[in-house]
Amino acid sequence: MVSGEYKMRYRTFNNTGLTVSEIGIGTNRFGHNVDQKEVNNILTACKNYGVNFLDTANVYANGRSEECIGKYLKDNRKDFVIATKVGWPNDDDKGHGRLSAVNVNYHVENSLKKLNTDYIDILYLHKWDEITPISETLRNINILINQGKIRYLAISNFNQWQTALTYNLAKTTYDIEIIALQSEFNLIKRNIYSEMEDLLKYLNIDFIPFFPLASGFLTGKYKKDIIPVGSRGEWSDNMKDMFSDKYFKYIEELEVITKIKKISLSELAINWLLCFGNITSVICGVRSVKQLEMNIKSINCILSKEELEQIDVAHNILVS
Image: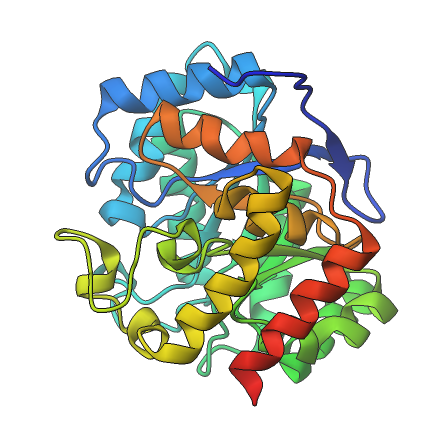
């Protein structure tokens, strides 16, 4: 159980009335190495702790993530804001453009069925489609919104020009607000947010970070020359560059702060993200109730201006 003073906080997406918990739950392991029993335990704990934001995708665990959530949602739909995604390459696309009208319709209907619901709170366009004109995608999304199957639209892994083009066309032609961009952002990898920050603030689009713990590197479990058996570090291309002296030196500098504040490295990493005003919720992947409780403890941490500056100075180790 989470000890001490604890109360979940909530933030509202810009230009909407949609409010979500500061901690969101990433469900890409549901149906993969998290079975239905543990999914039920995690989602029940989410209800108890006030975590209402669930992030999934049609491709997570080949669709089993949505199925696991749907089995739990039967009597609990009103307690959660559900975000799912469409547009990542998968075997069901039959050669069409990933964000074609054919594929979007197919996957939205399939997601609704698996999630055991008649509406999706947030639908992300998971990845830019080089084949399908974005106008085709948005025209079809507009129909789905008017049918009540989608409440809000967001994008994921789009670059600057893709974001600007999609936002402008959605807003001016279809009166659709793009409410958020989701991409990787953490204490180690800051480049995407830095590149997008001015545009997002100008367009008033929120940012939803994934990999807040840098695939586990920011938990402190990785030591120099020691990669735990079965960990992501054994196989993830995303982590290859991290196993070098400068990254471990950076972790040592961050741990100076954590020791003084008596918090974990994970708590520091998540709370640092929550210091950004345009970040609505931090998506934390969990495989157990224990991991969930560890992540939500981070909202109790308050970083001072001096500590934030200390973190920025330490980060120069990685860019020098």
